[in-house]
Amino acid sequence: MTIDWEAEMREVRSRATAAARHGERTLGGMAEALKVLQVQDKRLTEMNKVMKAMETRLGSLEAALQAAQALQMDNRAGQPSRSSVALWSGAALAFVAVILSGVFLWN
Image (tube, rainbow, N blue to C red):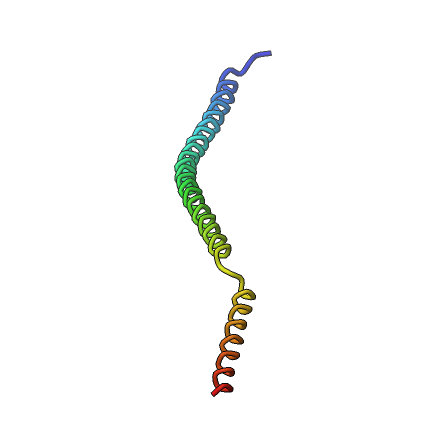
């Protein structure tokens, strides 16, 4: 039995060529994936900066809202209720009416 060295070399050469082609495709794909990852990393970094700015802004807005609510509660506590204002207004009006009716009746 004799070995056909030329056929074996052609087969090895074709397999090596195919392996090299697959290796180049794999490396090309990996290089493309790394480029995409680099771009995505930049975008993610920018998004994180925007989110931090938004969180800072939201924190200041929440603080302003809490301050406004505290002022509103202080204003409500300092003002008399509407029913007490109406009661005192009615009492003052009745007093003036009694005085005026007395003035007109006595004259």
